[in-house]
Length: 271
Image 1: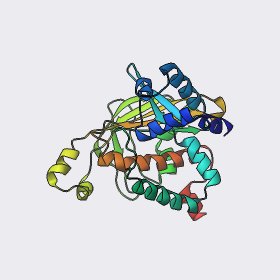
Image 2: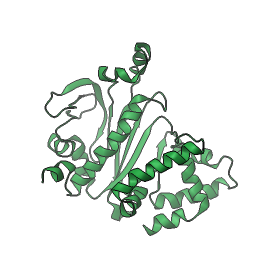
Image 3: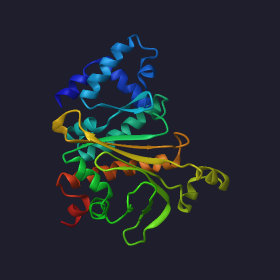
Image 4: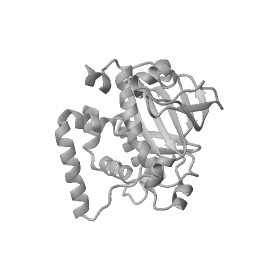
C-alpha cells in the first residue's frame, strides 16, 4: 500500500482523482482543462496513479480514457474500516453532500471496473465461460453459450429456473484475452421503475454490451488484470446501468474469491 499512499500524498494527483470521481472516463485533454498544469505534468501524475493502480485506462479508437479504479481504496477500507462502520460513514457522507447542496457524483454512461486476480489468463477465461466454473461462483445462475462469435447466450436468473434466450449474442471470443457479448434489454419485471408505458418502451430500446479484457497486471505480483466494460447505455440515468453496476462488482468479487481458492459467501453460510 506504500505506492497508494505516496500517490495520494500529492494534492495535484488527488485533484485528478476527484475529477475522475466526478466524471469517470476522461481523456488527458479533458483532465487537463482548467488546471494550472501542463498536459505533460498531468500525464506524469496519471502515470504515478496508474502505477499505484488507482487509475486504469482504456483505448477507444485513437482516444485513451482514464478511469478511477476502486480496488486499492477498497483494500484500504477493508483494512481500516470495519464492516459495521462502513454503513455509518456512507450515511455521514450522504448527509455532508446534502448539507453542502452537492448531489452524488455522476459518471459517463458506461461502467468500467478493474480487478486483479492471482490466476492464469487461461483459467480466468475458463471461469467466464465454463458452466461448472460459472455455477461455482454465481450460485447456479447463467450465463451459458457455446461461446462462438454470433452464438446465442442464455441466462438463468434463478438457480431453480430454466435458461432463457433474451436475445444476447457473443460478439468476441478470444480465449485468454477477450470476451464480449450483447446484454439483454429491460424485462417486464422492470416496468414499475418507470412512470409510464411510453417511458418503459423507450428504455427497452437501449442495447448495451459487456466486454471482459484479460491481460497481465502492470505489476507482475498482482497477477492477472481483468477489466470489465459495460457500455452502450443511452444516458447516465439508465436504469440498466444503475441495476447492473452493483451486480457486476459482486459477481467479480465472487469470481476473484473462487479463483484464488477462498470460500465463497454461500460456502461460508453453509459451513
